[in-house]
Image (cartoon, rainbow, N blue to C red; front, side):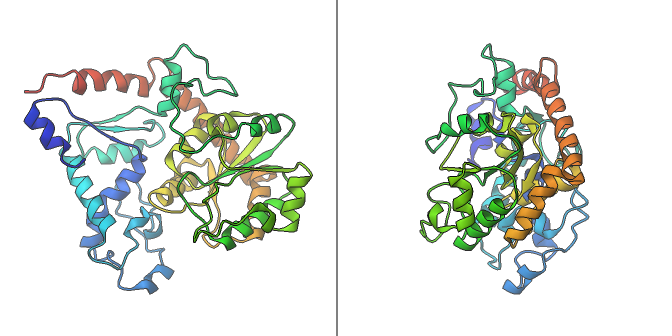
Length: 363
């Protein structure tokens, strides 16, 4: 929709661009032109992928960034890479828009949002959007309901039995890598072995297509230990679930996630710490912010191994690291509630967006 700003001006109607990514993700994408100018993109050859720790201390609002933390489409050796070209065009379009709407809360990404203001039109943070809509709705947001029953954009059928399974559990590890990301058979097996060895009950949302190359690997082939955990009721595998309700369930103590933005917002609203394993796009950027800035999570190694999965899960569930992350997660939950409540920052930004942009008379 890069033509939208010009089309809106020609038609004389208000226009704003809604980015579903985080503010830090938008900042990462906006730096693609700098990556090219500084000779970092395209990569010289595939060997450069083995050393991604080049510091990028010049990124506005995010001086702790490394090349590996930038939205991952830039990891290319192709000077004509399609995704890089599309990103550059999208950023030019965004810069020419009347307003940018972000599904985030200002308090969470203040430094980045302030830095974005130098290059973009007025930015309106209205998130977490689902929480904001629930706050403005008469329908209560309960443990087993999002409060937004009429809004369901899931592309997979939800398996509701996991909620009743959670009712009888404590300290459950919830694992979900989103609706798009895929894993190799080896990665799937390492996660299965790690979950079986971590010592905590687990709920794993494992899509039918999550294993790449059409391997179609079944739970029965993952490991005997994993099978035993599931058979004994200490583990449950479902193809999809009502994630917001699961994250708010009192039994869930940790979210192992790909760090997709919707998932992180839902974890923030629920006050849950996260253990990140980013896969692609701006998930890498989000994960870096989780670990370095927001403080509500930690990261698994890129090359996932079962021992690391089990160790990190235990540390997050019962160690000092987990205690620190839970405290920060609780703080962000409180701030998200305040931002989306009446007169909170996101609430006020919706009113400002309406008055300043959407209801304004185009001249």
